[in-house]
Length: 159
Image (tube, rainbow, N blue to C red; front, side, top):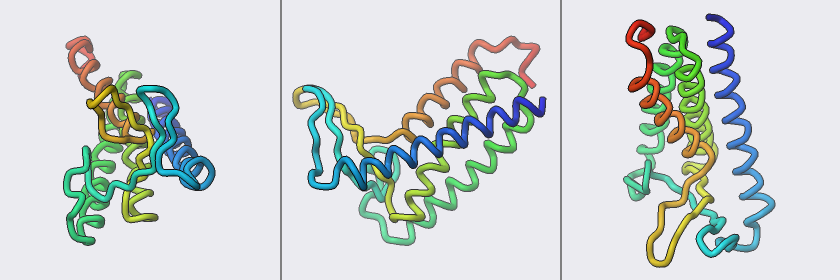
């Protein structure tokens, strides 16, 4: 059981490290002289600072919102870590690790810059998806895996 907890924490640490490395590369090396760098006809690298939450909600909130978002994220991270300590299924351990790592990566941005660094931008014609980052991807994949685990886990192993 202890090894599973460690695996979850290692996954979270790896996500934080990769997320922060990717953001550092974007901000200091790749997007130094441009705000948009076309990569393919449907994908661009962009430099976008999101002071709000998902999909740009609350972008114009007052400065205090930054600390509220960090506090809420901290509570959620704490709850997820508590859950991690109780779970036994490997898929759920990995999923929680992904979500925790992504949340921590975005909290670091909020504390350092006051906003989250987003840089992955997909679009097709006039349709587009809001820019996001590795932490957001990790959270999304982790939540998806939690849903899959809850749907397909054996009834007897729900502990």
